[in-house]
Image 1 (tube, rainbow, N blue to C red):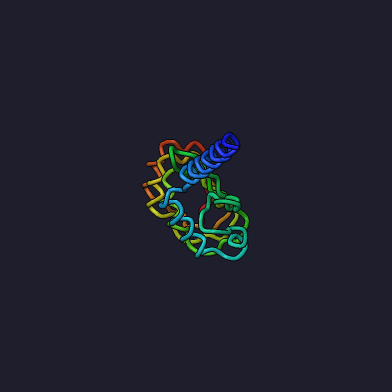
Image 2 (cartoon, rainbow, N blue to C red; image 1 turned 60 degrees about the vertical axis):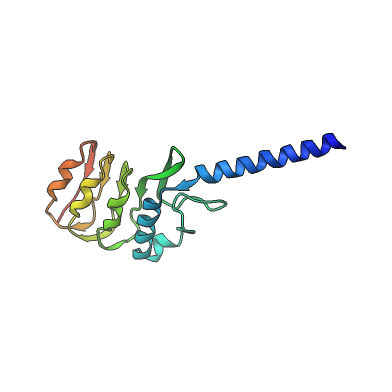
Length: 159
């Protein structure tokens, strides 16, 4: 009887340890959560319907948001890819994207984005791929785009 109680207690301790470790490991950096929730609130229903919950990297039973890829960095998750294309996003380039500082891929092609590419784009120091073609963005590139030293694929079609 004592052995069974000890085994049961050990199982409970192990389960709680795994749950707590998973919860700590699973938290998404607040900066990324805030940025993507800002973007979510400004997008049309075609994207938002699949963006369920508050955490873009997923939490508990909720999967990551469609088009969002996250990676583990230490105890936290960060957004490393945002691919939201061909869903008729209308309006100015979502400046909140430039707060996703660990972004390696940004693909917003084939939408209806207008206006300038914001100078804050230069903040995305890890960006390797930037695809903004088939939008209606202004034909002037901000000088800060030159700060994207790691970018090896740049696809633009400006008007």
